[in-house]
Length: 390
Image 1: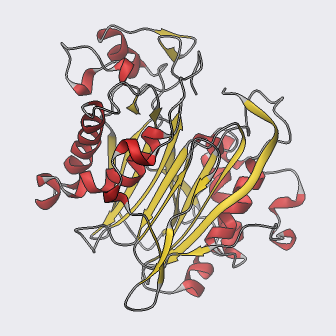
Image 2 (image 1 turned 45 degrees about the vertical axis):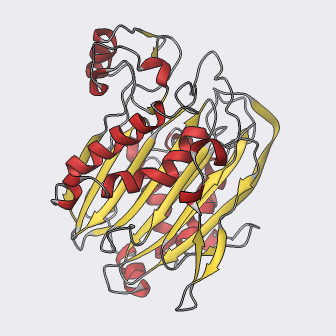
């Protein structure tokens, strides 16, 4: 667990965007941590491929530099691969992760960077859902009310992960890589990627992602992409139930995101770190060209299957009742109905808010002038990681 403040920073950076196929809300909160190290991106149309949507969360550790860079550039690396042009999306995701990591480690200003980040991305194209993941941020789909994981956490204690770590010259101690890092895969963390006899996929810590894919069906209601600040506090099914109940009551996705952050924030930091992390959530409502009212009606249908006993756990207070939903005070939501929104919280705790510009159709979008900023320009000086990094 990282260092914490005496009081949490509860201001939320919130945005929303929509088209006929998806309606998206996102929110992030610094919480108890001294710095905000998360970043996230949502695009209704990926550059170079207007038929693909892209959503991602990056949970930085040891600083925000790697998470910020990934938030701006990873989706471009994926769609610019030859594999993507050939329709091999799963291969393109794998190549994109490795390419951005290679680009950073070969950059003069970043090769000695000590920070790192998780990365979980969801790309929707041709009615298929693709998910790529390194680390312990997570993507989960709601299918007729049931949580279906799209990604799986990478922890050093996992048998296959531990074998790779040891084979590359590392070790696992206290469920951490070399007694330090709580993740077994990540972007950045270059100190764990210096075995010259091993390819990138076989380093102590690797940026090689697991990739899953599935066909989107009418039963797919929504997806949630979030960092471990959420998943450490609630199970997959608890989060799905929490969000679905609110959608059934007609609440907008960006408001549900804020509700979830408030629910997961610890009242103090005496709970072993649970609820004390930075928190970032992206909710993707799958309208599937049938409109918001139809989506709300779908979320009111009974769940079609029974979750496991652990996932049946629910809040034992009244806050989960739709009748008690009250919108908390919050910062104004920023519309992003076309194009891209990338939230890049700075490592000083100040939020970097993208410019709001007008398109020819007079639709406000959030815009980041990403191509004008090399790695050294947009990121604050990174911090040395603590002895143990979450």
